[in-house]
Length: 489
Image (cartoon, rainbow, N blue to C red; front, side, top):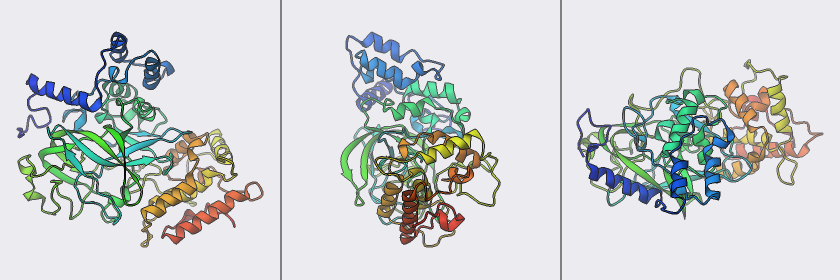
């Protein structure tokens, strides 16, 4: 559907009631049937009464929703799809991002297993990226062309430490009430929650699985596989400037099917609304074409010139009006994030503006000291820090041999970080890393990284063994890079 330059970012037939009716019916199909039970009036009052003060416990969406469920209200009664124009460039499902602060950082919940989906690399039938064992992640248009069914990674805290945050584009929140509450808390562009310890309502809703009716999990952005889809060791993007259909998967509902890839990783199906406009693909390279049905470097001959496609596949994509990936402000970085936007490892010769004897560091060291899990005495805070970041590629920029297999990475992370979600004090640990702008470094910054073998010999042995295992699969551990977290046999 071709639009002129002044209409490109809005629905082309916004005045056509039949089009809006069709979209509404499709959204009902995606997000569940609306109930007409005897509780409908109560549900209406619940869902249409946005609360401005999200800092009060009884006004947090997930708690209010849980209370409503106890009163018999159905989930689809309290859900309103966000079809509003959240930016000047389109509605929520256009997945528009204009600044780094648009990406709300969320920490997975602790004390239980939690999963989310990653659709950022979905699109063609054939695998993409720079790893030979990357799976095929196709995005197929539905027969009516209003949604795309996308195969996406499932990322679980059983496999990846909950120390790794996930990210939500504030402009792309699919639940209208949660979008409004998140804007009230974080500001329209997310600035008030950027690099702070605020708890955005959208994180609360996703962690409680109350964002979208009947979804098994939600599609967000995660840095987990960023190195597997980078070009020349740097994340890239492909500009598709001519308007065409793409899948806006941010905060879309996802469902488990039992599918696994060749590496044994869980693959889920996400129902992503589609949008017609310019976009960027979250990877670059000779096999990346704006047309997800082609594998050629000649994007100029792509069917995106007319907005039509000769096949059924579309890219999962987003739109940055400035073009290309967004670079963080000078000096800013995200702890534990692999790639160029992530923070580096601890540097022994650097002065960190954090008092090791202050209360914050006392709480951090106490958290490490008490980070044993299950029946063992290994302090998982140390073993995870010694393994997590380096295994994901942080600090490996000068390591020409870095190429661990997916199986090796998953195995190391499971062994090193199992139980990390149960640590009391994770927020303090992440706050130190954010203030110090380094990854897997809180114990070193606070001066409690010297594991006393008289107190915990098992932790020393575990860290020592994990470092050996890292070296065996081409990973340089922190012990070799900055002489910390070495452990002892």
